[in-house]
Length: 404
Image 1 (cartoon, helix red, strand yellow):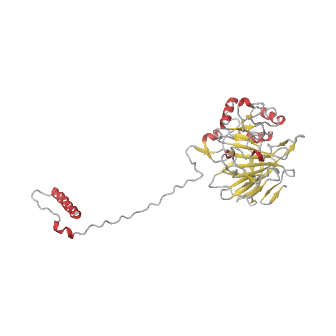
Image 2: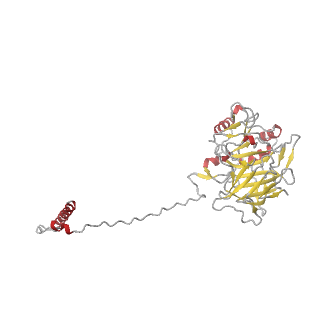
Image 3: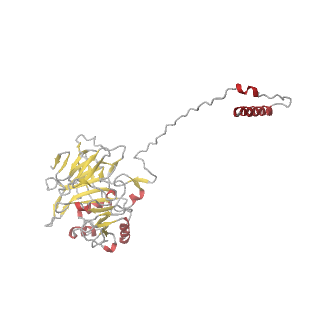
């Protein structure tokens, strides 16, 4: 019955439509009689062809900013928010002692230094970007004056907990500086300029401790101390011109060192001959294109993120040095243009020379053709080592020892 009713309704509807369009004299109704309904074949619905649309994948280049307002970091060429470049980085003195590991804030380091100090021990300094929201930075130890000269080219706020007064205070106050200008801005846990408990820049973990490796700071403490000291939070134009610190290339056109016929394989870098206590080393990860850092034979990690330190670029910078006194304090000549070294990236190494002519000018690295070396986007590890023939001047790359 349902089928019959459906066709009757269809016939009535058709008749009404025809009637509406006919003249008054035409009273014929065109339709289908009830008797013939059983003879009508039911209409078969034809299945509609479903056309599957192939999703269009949007290609995003790593050389394009991932979000509006992002710019290239001056110090790593990685994408950062514009205000990161405007604000001065921190130059943080990290101890390298085994009991001081792991340390906080290392994932925000753009450029990392390791340099020998007295007692056959080395120390580290990190140029830390985007530090304001870090919940802990450190632990923090004392500085040596050659670290200050290495730091100045980034126009940072230097963060340290003391240092040999005889060799550090004059640099910080301008007394021993060539121009005599009091231009080095620092936060120190003990005594002197913008230093000590009056500025509230540091705290101890555990609270109340006075032992080594227990001094820390964080973004909010540093901000408050900078404000109290009257330091500029943003880069000072008289000391920093802006722009990239190194000559960088992007992700899509990396510097593989293939253009250098004398480039050698460099996937395993052992610096134990330069740093015999820490035995710093790097191992190349070809999948990520970075070098992973170890200390004492174990991964060196950020205590906040658990990330192992990794670097796109590695510099081994030979430097004139001397022993200053009976305490074994050292001096390294950070202004020079007579020494050489090696540049390592993407699993290869080339010989290079370096030049630094003033406090705030960047150290520049040149290949043997006299062309400035192009750095790959990412962090840079700089090993400042003693010149040829000295006690701590040997290092090994892929089993080959370099000392002469």
